[in-house]
Amino acid sequence: MASNSPRDISNAPLGKRKAEDASDFGQDFPSLDGEPSPKLLCESSCELSQQDTMEMSRLAELPPNTLLMEIKEIYEMAYELGIQEAQEFARAQHLAIFNNKKKKL
Image 1 (tube, one colour):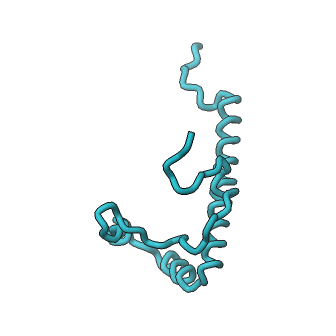
Image 2 (cartoon, rainbow, N blue to C red; image 1 turned 90 degrees about the vertical axis):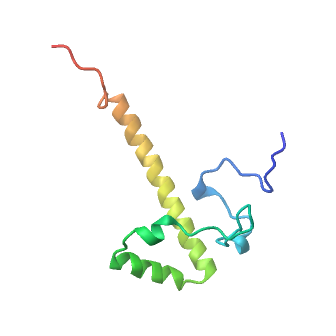
Image 3 (tube, one colour; image 1 turned 45 degrees about the horizontal axis):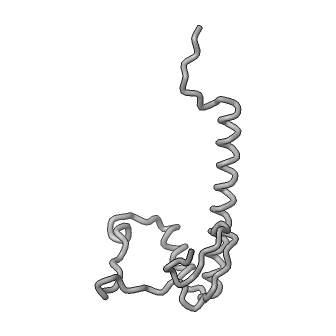
């Protein structure tokens, strides 16, 4: 069955996928009505710590290819953490740690 998307998305997890074209990564795409996409709500309502602003400044100064590599590393870490969490949850279920039934005395 053919998909309507211009690119086929592989079944690989995000950390294992390869970018098809890094030149379009991170560009702002217009919304359906042709207007630029609105800013995130968090930009105006979230308070950032000094460490957060320093990290944002560091990332803003990186060249595009280096920034892409940083993002790929973050995806890879998130993927690995997700696997570890799933393993721990499966272990907890196996050991009946999250058993909702009350034990009868």
